[in-house]
Length: 248
Image (cartoon, rainbow, N blue to C red; front, side, top):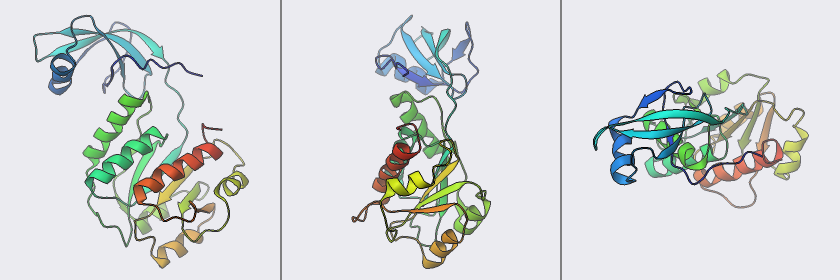
């Protein structure tokens, strides 16, 4: 099991990483480290870019408004991520922020906004989603940032999902326990999987029918209670990770 350093500050930098590299920080990052955290010259940080693993670097300030990181060594290699896409009907700002952060914490490797007939928030701010994904990764020791897809209408999105990919969608009308149903579909523990959670009004009957006509589809019930969409995201991802993922 990997040993994580939870005491050091972690920072995402979208730059190639190698021993001896010197990486410039942007103004916001430098201000946060120097003026908020009060770090100084030579203080150690952990840095990652989502591609090259995790590295230890030393802070090199240049005044109070700019700084760089001098990389010393790689402390964790980049893991191979499981192909776990999380597709969802967008929510309003604060709850969407929460849902994105928790999906990243739970191991989602792609975030796919899907506009269904009952979706209440039809506009998605991709940059805001990326910022929340980065924040969750920085705080939780995650090295793999999720891909963020552009929003798509339900019919177009469903047509683009490969037929051999397992599609799990949350359906309050599904019968049977979740874990045995998932286990029955677990022919290969590394099988690509997409989890789809609809809007709080549920899927339109035509959308549910289209999902059920698709091959390799599994309806997933989360119990007798009706969950809010952001709660359902955490619950469903936990069930999937327990049955098929890295919680086994």
